[in-house]
Amino acid sequence: QVQLVESGGGLVQPGGSLRLSCAASGSIFSIGNMGWYRQAPGKQREWVATISSCGNTNYADSVKGRFTISRENAKKMVYLQMNSPQPEDTAVYYCQANIDAGLGYRGYWGQGTQVTVSS
Image (tube, rainbow, N blue to C red):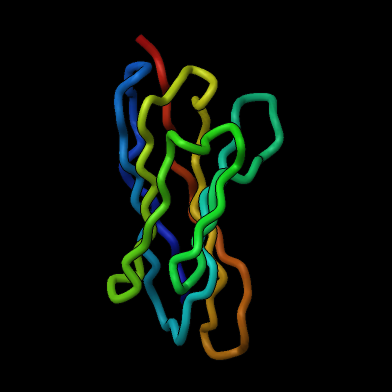
């Protein structure tokens, strides 16, 4: 059974930094795109960033230049480095990955980790 588990969330001051991690585990043949999404209170979940299996990255305009997505394929990990976060970045952050567990690729989600940006 495939699982995605996020870690690294918490309280961070505006202008600080925080790194989120997400570990994939289970019977995994291959991992395609991995990404981060977030959902603020009262808002819909929104896309933050994506990284392909060969390292190509894309970012939402709202985080471009401040957040960096990376991955370690051998460890089945994806990261989100959050620099200069602002209060509007406060949200539950979710890891998402397209994983082939033997029956073709399908999307999986983590349970989410809370990030609060406040002084």
